[in-house]
Length: 402
Image 1 (spheres, one colour):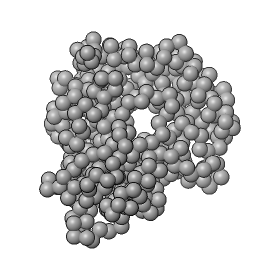
Image 2 (cartoon, helix red, strand yellow; image 1 turned 90 degrees about the horizontal axis):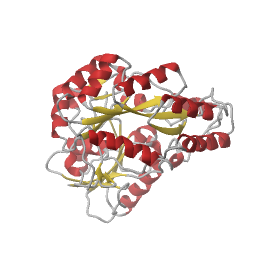
Image 3 (cartoon, one colour; image 1 turned 45 degrees about the vertical axis):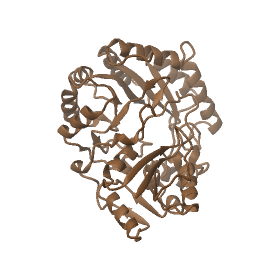
Image 4 (tube, helix red, strand yellow; image 1 turned 30 degrees about the horizontal axis):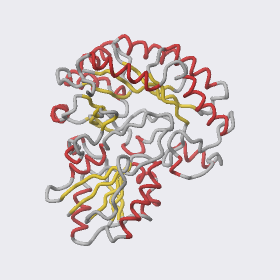
């Protein structure tokens, strides 16, 4: 069969640098596809999806709630042309009834152990409406991503090839307020075999990778083992939330870590100290700043910007608390009548979709806009990013484009 993997577009943060990373979920589905099938990828974030291209199956892969409108529209487009559609991914797990109205079949949860059965059923014209694993996938079932579906030079920004994405584990035990990971991947931290991870990393052609695990700091033993295994692989890497342990920070830096995404919910001494530790080890920090918590009043915006500038944060991404469907937060706010609408395309962590506790929706939206502009007032986001990449180039890990 000719299988077209489709990755829909979504409304991005207006102040965010508009680069596009390769969709890891689609590459994992490709890896789970039996070799007798032909697989190709259409990423709508790069180019419009050609609904008339030959296909025996359109497999729509999603990661974000805000992809829902485009995912459903694309699915409808293929079905109107007689092409069967299967939808899966995080959005589908959170909005299964919506997805089921636009697809011939949906996959709820992880694709390991399920996807080959979907294809076999389709070939014998016995496709079921819903496929679901009875349990979460074991680490030994998680394949190395199939990166040959990405065309050479397809994922680049201003001549710079973007990072390849690699997962070394799934699940997160923390269960932070707005996060969808526990809903989709469970709270059990499932770690892949380290030898398999190293083989995959060695097979990645790009010398820069993004370790996409939800929070590396949730398991310090895994951090230490991973960073020791990565040392000497020649990869410069980005990840989420390292443990604030001196030995772990040192191992991370020695293994090639140069940039970390750190969630910032409060202007706390703990966060200040953690940023300082990462800087001391030569690791840059981008804060993901969550605004609109129930304890936040109109004074939070200036207070947070002042705090972040004082900490010397390298980059900041200001986001609005978003009660995603499928989370306890959404259920609580829905029950309390605080959800303003269910226009899923606007659930992108920029639009205010709920009624804040201590300010108006308009105050929250305006405050978030002000925070972006105030943080980057003295040095633009692009200038800060250029400085960071020049520092990376100075380490010999990357050569600027000619």
